[in-house]
Image (cartoon, rainbow, N blue to C red; front, side, top):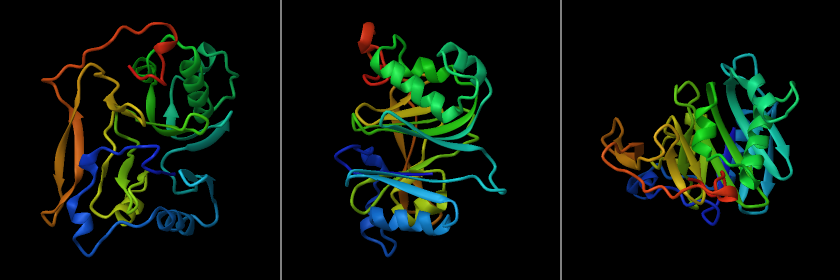
Length: 251
């Protein structure tokens, strides 16, 4: 999967951008070049969707060599690419009043839409209820919102980085991210969620802040940053009331 979002939609954590990306031979690519790389490497089973000049999603169907299942779904201008498997999907579908055949991507869309519009539960509580291995990307075109999450067991690895034009790039393909973002990339932290308006949060420790730790590659060059829970910090949480307690308004 691939998601690319311009700066006007998503402000990437400043720690992702490495000074080495502008001063060394290996420089980040433009968004359209990264998309072309994705499409050419998945030429037989890939498609892409562009949303004006601000966002694009690309998806390739799983093949015989795929380790994890993946799905792409869209509903009411909300799009989701999901990788992995939810072991409690049947129970979750029943809880949300969905049909038995609803796949993981469509469930995530329905849960996101429900909680965005009228749900009483915060996103961290909902994500903590997901059992299994997962990594997913949501783009809410109507609201211009990006939401990313990665399961805590780390079996579905996601990566994010910064393209030459400042766009944030998200994919499970580390080689694509490396080639497209040069030194300005890092693994997306497991057990975490990222909201384009409210930033990065660990959904298992929602009252703790995240801290960035510089990554140094084998050449001794700073290469983005790893993000982890700052056990010494605490976020002052406001009471969640009514429609304000949803995925759109974070925590």
